[in-house]
Image (cartoon, rainbow, N blue to C red; front, side, top):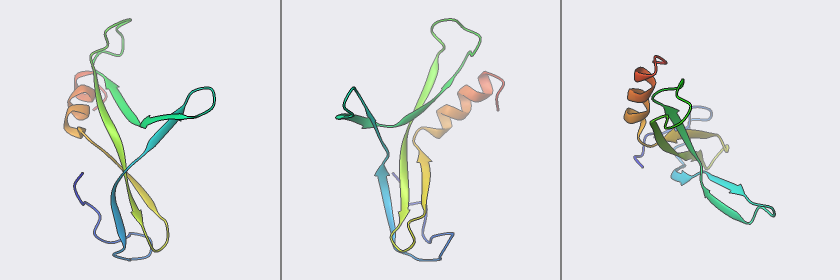
Length: 88
């Protein structure tokens, strides 16, 4: 992921941890995990085969105050699907 945050918007620190994957824990005991993601359907009215675009979630974390900002991969494809579905 690109280093998009140079300084923390809360405290102004330059102690930024870049590209930390946001993990989604699941399963009966919460033992398994995978990188969290978002999706945008291209045709929200479709019952099946919604033609979705996916993006993985990453964090930019301030090492001074703890503020975290989310970033998503493949944001251009997500935007295109949102426009296709009339959401953009």
